[in-house]
Image 1: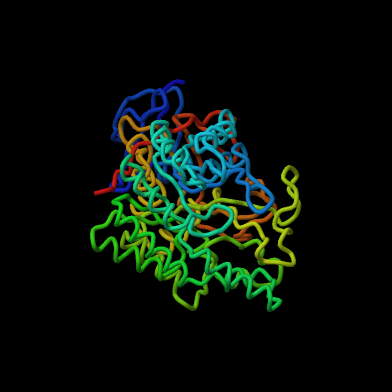
Image 2: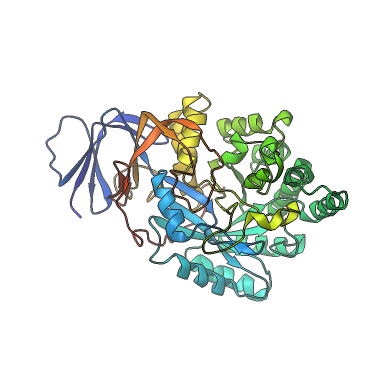
Length: 470
């Protein structure tokens, strides 16, 4: 691979905006140059009038996840290619340990799914679904393999659920080995009672998924997870935070100087409980936690949390299921046609995050350009031990770069997206700005509305510790 020069653009990082040319060699950024220079390169990319930004990092995706009798529609090949089209150049997915299985076996299975198939670099969190003495030993083995974060569920009894005792033991081990605990914080035991009662009343439509999963139960679980983390000293990362009650608990903990962090997702910033209406069409928007009632002020509070750094990251929780049958995995959302509790939980989004947050955040004046880069690239890299290799444009960093046209336009549609799912959650949305060129480790993989990469371009990321913990 020869030298590449990105010329004429405005380089944007989490802390700087500068007029500079970017020189790339052997997959790395080797110089940031003023306009007056005489450097030659084998390839030149004209970025005049464009932003040159770090590639996005989505630290919450679920490729090929088994759930509700089917599998997430995107494979590692299709999902990472779609991510690249949307300006994301690295993901951290979730390997799964199920009941009765070794955590290391789960990790190796997910490594096998991803290896040789990914368009961009990838790492893994580990879902620890069976806490026992063997699992606790294997957590150290996984850290040695570069898996430095473990996800637990206070939801989904009988599937991924862990009780408070299991959570406490895993948190103690996480604190010992320098890991971060990622938590799906909803009170699943209480939710199951409300689901049962709703179905007994004949309330079967998708909107009841949003009605029964009360925001107060997300707030309660978040508070409980924070107290267990405080007891053990482990860094805690609340995934897909959707409710103001949960954010209040995070804010209080952070104000007290605790190692508590949180992400939200585009669906909670832009969609609402209303999307779950309109009969079974609402199944498109079934995810957990659910979309919230906009009249309760959740969206506004989430944007405020991003502005004040009480929310640090926007990820997608990309976990798509088709409305019709998937050509490989079969029946998906239709599994819940007569029972909302059987609708596979998840939405597509890995291709849309970069554009949605730029449009709704920067273009609409909610956040600055630097803050945009921070929440979609730099903080994810630092939170999960990839910085400065990833998440910035600096000498020695991987040349994962997006050339973004702020004056371009993007229309989101199932007809043009690259995710392997038969609908878009944002069908017809017109966004300001367009991802024009995407480089992964110096290789141009998207340019001129053409995909130039191939499966296997992405490599496994061994991650370090959370760089924010006190």
